[in-house]
Length: 446
Image: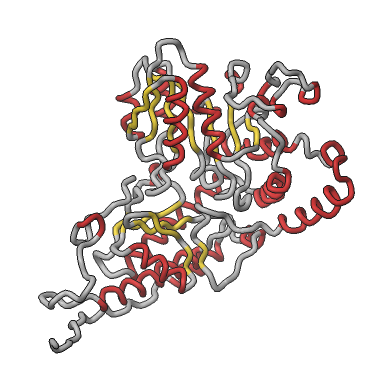
């Protein structure tokens, strides 16, 4: 038998002084939006930085849902469709979301999942496009489901799908383009795309602009009306804190509503829902974006969750978001050993959403360890750590603690690596995507 021997380990980097903790306390004391954290169910032992996947529970929700179940469902039962306002919930809640996405009244309706609403928007947009269109453009870095749905809708209409980087849409759109489906914020990198410029470029070629707002609504100002966007969809369980699986929403620009033909006509979008007419006549206005019976429990939980926005301006949210993400990057620079991570989120404010994505070797294992130590973010393959900042409840102390713990984990990771020139330990190998990690290479570009 060969003699076993331990692989020499390199000494880990010395822990730096925790210099930013005091500054975090000062920033939290100064505000803004410090008091709104009390509107959510959170604990002080966890830094929750995953609101870009699932928002925290607003304190207003449990009591409201208990009332809906006990009284509206338990006592009023079927009468609640009229007496408790269940029937009008989709458009009523849409009116509460509208200011957060820069929409005037009468243009947002809530219901169904994001994927279903993407299908409605893309198919409805194709049907409104001019004759002679042969293609749709899809954000090349899009969340996969958007691409799946867009391709299915295009195939049904006999159109081609062309993936295009958002920054290239102005150069790639042609008179044969029916529409483009674009993410306002890239889900992986947190890059914010220029809605005004992209929409204008599409319109100049006669194409429609369809926007996915999942990673922007509730985190930064969105100006659908001002930009002239045609259609938009968004989820409500991220920065709007509606709860797991909460219903999505659909925006249809006022001037397009009479032309919008839903690919999913249902009795709830009929002009006379209780007429039971075998022929379909669409309802007026944005109501034609409805389909079937609303998911009342989830919808009313969302309505209660939106109370967390009372007295809050989206501009305040954006200011705090940028301050938080700037501060987090400063803390990472102070606490994390050099060369261990690289930000793939744009540094320019005009190009940054409300998350920071860091490329990191062994990112999946690193995030699992962060979560074990009370810092909750998430991991996206192949090598991206995502940290979402929800200004209504994320504190500067959360940001500082997350960076400190990340530094701890990566110092331990560095210490566990074999010394230069030593024989590799079993299982050691190349970094992400088969490349040796040098502190600069990495994925996360989408």
